Length: 48
Length: 160
Image 1 (cartoon, rainbow over the protein chains, first blue to last red):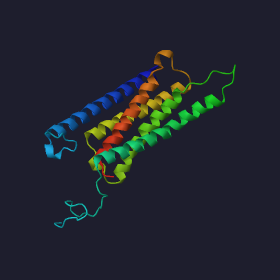
Image 2: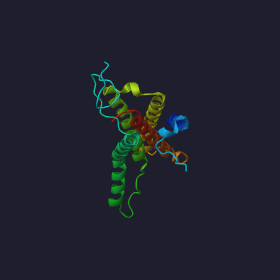
Image 3: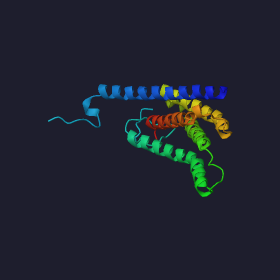
Image 4: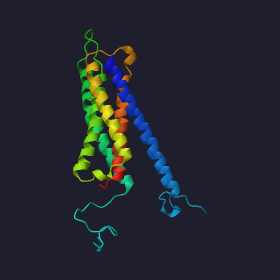
């Protein structure tokens, strides 16, 4: 049926956008973490 | 304005007074909690269907009806309520805080809502063949994922 094809395409596009958004947000968070000064990191590791 | 707002430390005084900015963990947590409540609202038809299938079951009667239409309802409700939260931000005057990620997730929610709405009459009339039985689950996955990410992203960007 044509309806199922349209629904499949829309669902696939939606899932693709969700995956892209997740990767984008994760990469941005990692970049912010890596470029932040250590004293501004909330969950920083304490070295002896 | 050169006078500083004493309540917020560094922000200048403006006409619009915003509430104080909470920690981002709290904001994202509140947004995800509201998303859980919205998803529970969408889950009510599914729970009613399950309850009716338990109560009305009779030996030798008709086989229990499929629960795939309720899955379509849940996907439509979750994604459309996430889109309505964007409308709420618009009327609050905080639409300028939308970024590319917001637009991408809004488009994903629109696609999920449309696919749930298109799939519901097909599923409700038992026109779904056996090879397509997994499609409503993928629609639900797309709707829940897109609405959850949009809620978390709005919670991170907005102040509430």
